[in-house]
Amino acid sequence: MTEVTKTPAAGDALPVKTGKRTNPLANVFDELVRFAQSRSLFMLHYCTGCGAIELPPAMTSRFDMERLGIQPMVSPRQADILLVTGYVSVKTLKRVILTYEQMNSPKYVIGICSCTVNGGMYWQSYATAKKLNDYMPVDIYIAGCMPRPEAVIAGLRGLIEDIRRGTADTWKDYYRRYDHYLGNQQRLFGEDWQTPTDVIAEARHYGLFGPGTLGERTALLERHQKPLEALEMKLDIPELMARRSGLGSKGRTEVK
Amino acid sequence: MRPENYEAQRQPPSHEYELNIGPNHPGIEGNYAFKLRLHGDTVLEGKADAGYLHRGFEKLMEGRLWIQNLAITPRICVPDPVPMEVSYVLAVEELCGLEVPERAQWLRVLQLELSRIAAHLFTFGGHAATTGMYSTMFWGMADRDLVLDLFEELTGGRVYHIYNIPGGVRRDIPDGFLDRVKRTLDYLESRLPDYDNLLFTNQVFVQRAKGVGTMSREQALEWGVTGPNLRATGLKFDVRRDDPYLVYEDLEFEIPSEEAGDAWARTLVRRKELVESIRIARQVVAALPKIRGTIRCPIPNPLAWSVPAGSAYTRVESSKGELAWYVVSNGGERPYRTHVRGPSQMHAVQVLEKLSVGARLEDIAQTMFSLDACPPEVDR
Image (cartoon, rainbow over all chains, first blue to last red; front, side):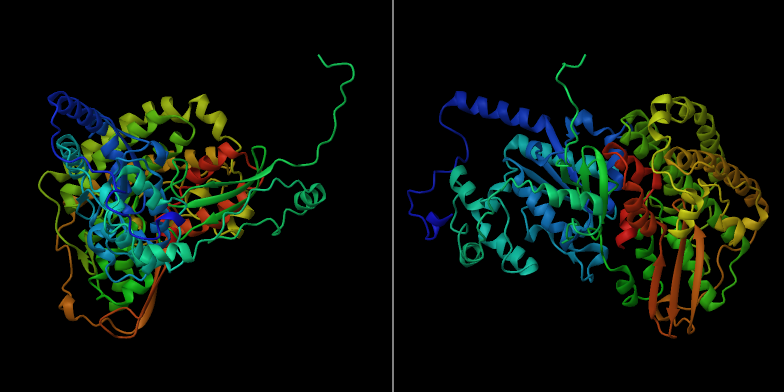
């Protein structure tokens, strides 16, 4: 991260592929890839709130999400869609952002329930984040409190159509305007907010380095960066024996 | 066959490690985390990590009108929202001294029992899924949707209904609704033998669930356990019978109980409660046509409604246990203070922490689902 403290020169960023390519075969290939992408989506549903209860009906036999090629996936690294189902409290939002940054591109975010749109029922709550869009780019919102399974299916169909047309590319916005998103996150979690993912390096890797990737907020990342703790294998047998016989509060982990 | 020079040695416990389950994990019920300290696959210590779903209900309600609060009360417990509404409404009625028409009370009982059926079907599915039996989940969801269809017809909402208001209910039943309730209840009852074959007498499930998460009656009472979890230890305590509200005094039903106090017993109690709920709902369906009259008593303008000063504590039996609202009014248009006594607070935090000590790793998810804890209600 140290090498990108200043705004990169024009040659640094790779040209972003937009629109149709000149080779007609490449266009056909792109179409095929997008069709395949849109028809096999693995979905990580983070049950952040009430909306999670309408997902089992949407997944199981009555509404059957699987006929659209959508299946739940338990690990973020293999998932394509991040479903944020309902209000996100501040404690949850940290985990949602960590999960989002772990996912591989292209990745799509769906905000279910009114709470992710504008705070919904909890607009005056001290504990929830109001607009999901401030913290990560959202592809599709499904409004309602709570949206019916039909609405969830309709939203997913909309996303599939967007992916097929090649317009579902909000994930690129996270890299191009990382400073904006990080600023909102820092406003909520404090200036020393850090995630393990080096988003700036990823932006360079994907060729998505935009004018908003770096800024005054990303400069804070470096200022507050803590050195990675080296993993030490320590086997202190007497201490372990004492902990095992004690089983008390000595080995308790602190809850953040 | 041992080698000749083999000699077993006592190894120091050096395989102790930590494992986080949740907050986003298929084996945990909702947005909730559990931190385990393990040796091999035996749990040495479990630590609940709640707070992911905190919205600050009790503070939110102080800032809203009495009638506005109706909209957020069911959102405290998502799988079983009706008892939340009803107990809040009962508290407001007690403060105002409102006389609720009899027909409204019967309609509330119908709603409460249908909600209990839906919640239990949901729990069976989740519990079976933690033991690897996903078919029950698919069946339970499909059957639960039939109950949700009834709710949709009656109230307009599948999950959140907001059908009860202080003084009665919002609207009367649609034409032919009772026939459809009867048909659905018949269907659900006819499905029970199938569920028995699939889950309740299935050795795959029985062997996994027996002896898991056992607590004695004394422990249950000490830890504040209520509802089916308490009845699974042999104590027949049910708010519907021991502190009757609405018209439960006029209804005939049994309080099912089991002696073992483990995950298996808790599941069996829920299965028997399903039968009792169907029985109660049938009685309501039979009685409703004979009870005529209004469905709500007159209330003042709800937008400028000052509830008399005082406090009320009303409790109902939800599918998870005893649920109560403590509401304090200082004579204003908004509540002065509200508090929820939810069953899952005890079940998911302290009971689960204690039951997990000494348990095996693969039984943790099952223990949590068998306690039927509801994380949104833990955090509020």
